[in-house]
Length: 263
Image (cartoon, rainbow, N blue to C red; front, side, top):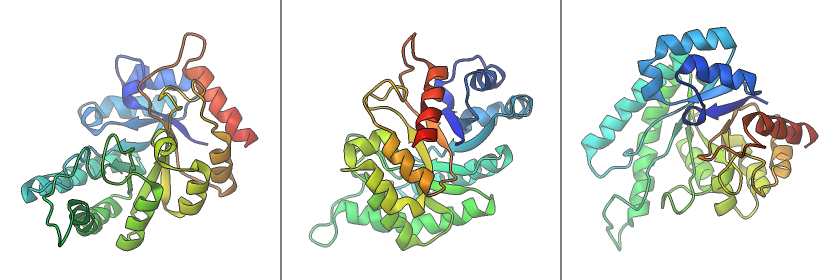
């Protein structure tokens, strides 16, 4: 199990302190934000070399990929190109993208096509291009399904897997975020088992979006599915809260690994 933490959660004044914190508390990796990594690339590489902490994943920052404005969409494609190049330099394997946040941005053309149908078609036309960009840099694009309160589009693993099947590009996959899945999926473990062929990365947060172990999520059934299938992707904590004085990052890492080992 390669266990990482999202960059914005980690205490420390810079990459040196952040990666030392990860190593001291039982973690293997950092999920990078490209804007920060690009500005502090030398410090990041030095800290990675000194600590042995790796960067399995990076945020893609693609908020306008399905914009109604073609220029805005092309700008997002170029951003993906830049992020994938940076990811390759940092040894990143997975670049996370969210096609669209919030409500639909394309006009409804009822009765011919709904806004969501248009977004589906638009995404199908964009993914082969950015998938090829990712492949040229040796990385995989992983689409992140979010819950219905954050986006109207791409809420479940089933929807993500269907997109991957249609696009049929080896560098386009999906990720599983346990917090969003506990809102949208009837059974997290069953959904993972059904669509695992397309799952490349995992985000971990508890039911209250705190550190795993601080809520009531039972991680064992889903971990069992991943473990039995030989899942080789990384796990990254992605939650805004940071536990309690009695249960912090070190305790969380121990809890996750113990749950995984006993699954």
